[in-house]
Image (tube, rainbow, N blue to C red; front, side, top):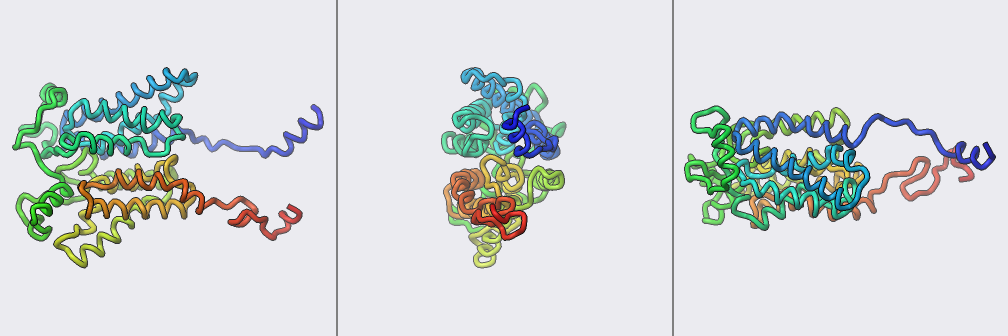
Length: 365
């Protein structure tokens, strides 16, 4: 061994692997989504299951196709690291439970090919792929993306069986009036456009219900807010995510909602309505916390989360779309490099400006 080799080996610090990996992290996030997803299957029946399954399979298929076209040598490892599967899972949870089959396929293409692989694959994308697909689908196909179904719990009277559910999923027929429904955010937005304020619209017998977990219209993952919260707490306890982004998102949404509702309850929804509707809980714990598209430091994550929550409230309250979480996440994704520039992690042994700290170990540095 020569002196040059010895110098290199001496200078290079030893590193211990913590045992974590992309696949293990993705698996834990998926496990955290299982209770809420299973509840969605029970609440909306077989068509919801087929939508979820096809969305995931389509994401895996487009991931495989992209890797082959790029001539990747790590197809198997990349395909089964769980990132494409999780992208499809999150996308499915934000879609109407009885959305037609082609929504799943097109959404998967946009998420994987345009939102992820165009930028270089896992770890390189600028925007959250699932939210890229969600926004593109909503803007391009507003009718099927805003058609909600009245919950028909599995095995209940009138609920479609396996064959009928598959037929509904494949035929893409419009929902019958008896099954069509409205989410809370969509309902209030429509009533406000008709000149009916919230005090009157939400007092009616046909107003959508609000609850932490219950039979109410919405996306596949919207009705199980309590289960989403439980999954998010599991991610916190297991160290997959930190508290900064989820708390900031919820605070950024709740604080302006509380102020607006206190000032004018006839035109601004309450805090509970905002937190229990749409993708608020899913966005706070599972979407805004994406490692790749969110800031690196705790302070940066707080700024990022507050921006997501505030923009969500603004879009919900003043925008043309009832839900604003996906738009808010993408807007803050674009600001992540700016946030990272001003909220840099401190280098060990140096201050925030990069200058050596005045400690004995650093003298002469």
